[in-house]
Amino acid sequence: MTLRIGVVGASYAQGTHLPVYAELAAEGVVELVAVATAHRETADAVAEKFGIRAHVGFEALCADPEVDLVDVATRPSLHREMVLAALAAGKHVLCEAPLAPTVADGEAMAAAVGNRVAVVDMQSRFRPGLAELRRLVRDGFVGRVDNVSVQAFYPTFTQPAAVAGSGWCADPRYGASSLRVHGLHTTDLLRWTFGELSDVRGTVATREPEWPGGVRATSVDSAAFTARTAEGAVVSVHSSWVAHFGAGFRMVVHGSEGMLRAEAAGHTGHFPVRLTGARIGDGAAGAPHELVPPTGGATDPFATLIRAVATGDHADLPTFADGLAALRVAAAVEERS
Ligand SMILES: NC(=O)c1ccc[n+]([C@@H]2O[C@H](COP(=O)([O-])OP(=O)(O)OC[C@H]3O[C@@H](n4cnc5c(N)ncnc54)[C@H](O)[C@@H]3O)[C@@H](O)[C@H]2O)c1
Image 1 (cartoon, rainbow, N blue to C red):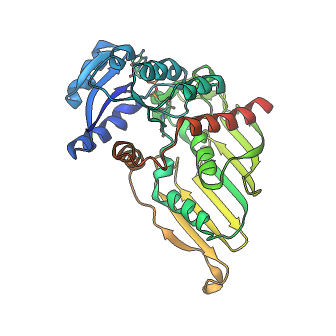
Image 2: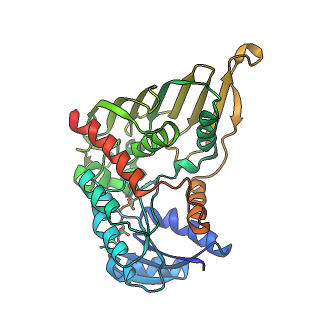
Image 3: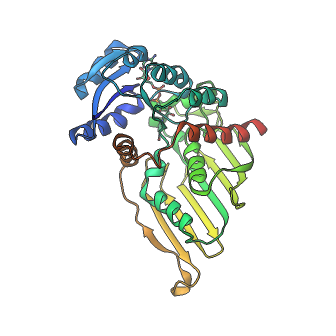
């Protein structure tokens, strides 16, 4: 039976999740059934745009018998209540990232999953350049992994449009920080590719107290941490979401037999990733060569993730356990700072 989807929240989701579901519905991969927002006017307007049912409040959508999977696309501070209601109603869940504002919330959510499919939208796994990096690392392309370095410098909240759309990110009470909202995608990629991180230590800061439009910001905007991979490689991550000239994402992997480099002009969830690499013994003095060109649009990895959910191809899906593990890394860095 085709997976029937209901979406809670139509701010970020309106330009990302909902159009993807509509496209996949046209292909017969899923059915887009309903949307819920906090207000009658917005619910009706979005429902009309997509030709679906409108609900006011997540409770009504969770009670909709024609919904199989609830997509929770609201700020993190609302996730626990909404996800638990969906799971209690027997629904599968896709929860936006980060899973929750606190580890305790994430634990309660992960504990309630039971036999349902419960996925966190850490969609960067489905960027071809990053999926290939993981495959190559596992196939021994670089040999023994020794060093992994990530720089993720984004200009997001130097830009008025981003502040207008996601201004809640300025306030840590909503579960926001650069290490959580953007950074969890990087943490998930590291865990997914290299195994569990240990020995996590780092430092964070709120360097930019005012965002465009006079928005006061108290959430963490800059963070750096080090860690060890399951095999003992040394990892460093440095990120910011207020870097005016932020060039985007760059992950470099050095091993005993080669290197890999993944680069994107912005957040890997939304920007194409180029993968280059070199192995000892390659010709031309081992100059790095392109392995995967930067392809795909802003919502492509989300569409691939949803296809995987809908077709039962669950091997690479980021689970609630993954979402919780990524939260634990962020908490370890922030709490020790
Ligand atoms: N995966 C990614 O790459 C990515 C990118 C951007 C944002 N996000 C995540 O997307 C999520 C949503 O972000 P946002 O900026 O849209 O959040 P938001 O909190 O601004 O969402 C607002 C929406 O939630 C609805 N809502 C609020 N209370 C409700 C209730 N009781 N019942 C039903 N609907 C209710 C509102 O009506 C509105 O439509 C966040 O978790 C964010 O971290 C993820």
